[in-house]
Image 1 (tube, one colour):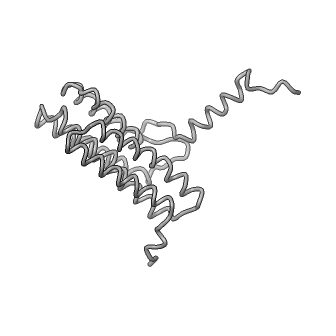
Image 2 (cartoon, helix red, strand yellow; image 1 turned 180 degrees about the horizontal axis):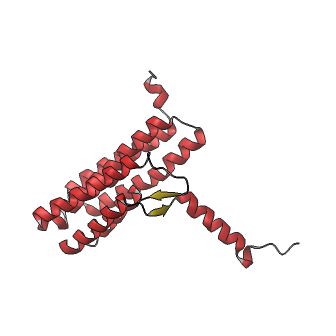
Image 3 (cartoon, helix red, strand yellow; image 1 turned 45 degrees about the vertical axis):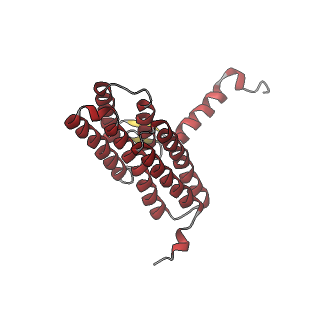
Length: 191
């Protein structure tokens, strides 16, 4: 059994900071501070995009870091948006609102549980959790009607558990680099 020092890595520190941001977002949500909660969720998403890159660069322990990352994602991008939905617009339709909030939460859990099983390098299968969480929180800033919130939440919940391919940040970066290279202005005039 490894000591706790083995797990004290920069990547795990970043992931832990993301989890802390998720907790602060949850507190802000409970206090009906949706803008503040949204900022914390966006901050958690930024940290989530950094921790994996740092772990790969340093070749850190993947099993522990992956599990910690999933737990942090569940709080920041699953629990916080589900709670914000229920305490916000979906509270006006108690039974349907609770069911829809739970559908989002369960979709998030299933998405995270499936991720290591069907992990692909070229794309994500289903909407990535940070994208879903940030979308819900930004959507809530507009104070949507309960009916619209039901529809949008249902659609995002379905996308979480779908098998539709979503590009990774690395895929998007490579595509933009290839586009720049292929663009006439980007080509060298030397032969």
